[in-house]
Amino acid sequence: PPCSVGEGSACATCAPDNHTRCGSCNPGFALTQGVCRPMVADSTENYLGFETDLHDLELGYLLQRADRRLEVHAIFISNDMRLNSWFDPSWRKRMLLTLKSNKYKSNMVHMLLGISLQICLTKNSTLEPVLTLYINPFGGSHSESWYIPVNENNFPDWQATKLDLPFECYNWTLTLGNKWKTFFETIHIYLRSRIKTHDGVNDSIYYEPLEMADPVRNLGYMKINSIQVFGYSMHFDPEAIRDLILQLDYPYTQGSQDTAMLQLLEIRDRVNRLSPPGQQRLDLFACLLRHRLKLTASEVVRIHASLQAFSLRLPNSVDYETTKLCS
Image 1 (tube, rainbow, N blue to C red):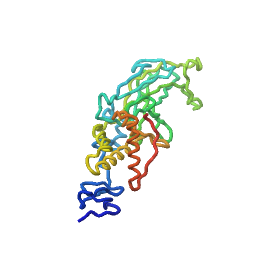
Image 2: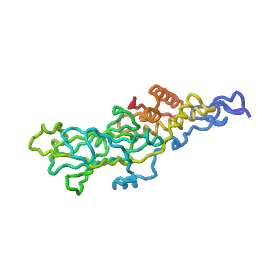
Image 3: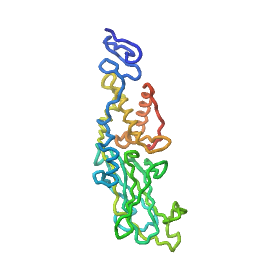
Image 4: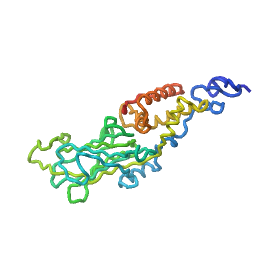
């Protein structure tokens, strides 16, 4: 019988070369072998993994124990200090932990679940460390990183645990867990110091350089024995995602362009859903395209516009504004 043209799953037009098959479909339906079927994105696992096999309680237990099975080995870089060496804490110290995925793990992306630093002070020191973290989700410069809002809007705070060591040593741990987990490639760490107070009056005042504070204070020395990053690595297939992007301009078959669009839309939304808390989501998907697929800024803009136009065609579509992070 000739194809049926109408709303819903009926054809929008019949195929010009075969009047028993659909040539195009109505919004929300994709053309598959001459038939219009509801648009549903396939699993993203072939392109980009998101989940671990561990449940919330298991993750919480392993993070609480600082289990090494959750440890992600990152490269430590700093011009200001060395691990396991005493330093003068008067000035801010900058360091970073990076994975260099494009060089060593091009088929992986990484999820951050927590970080722990073992920090020691000389006896009777009146200082305590103040840590500030920035995250590069998929690489790039420091300007393309976002600030971790520790202890803001229900975000977790640092937990200090006293260690049984000869000096004043603590494990300073920030646990994100499944609720606040996020992509990471590089973690920028800034370490400053403040004078310990017990009345809570001056506990947010930083002294830099600290020698200018009260000379009777015992500033002492500080060292970082170790830094542990907790998380997990997931499958990432950049060539498969490039193949989807290629089909935006050169579809393999009738309907394959819509299928590719739907798949990219699903990947975009799942990536951006893991952006940090805030009024607007960060455009982490653009960072993935820029730094892991090495696309130009103009290519990223074109893909974004194509996905936005396609999304508006879908029934019940809800698009959202994002804040640009990666140029």
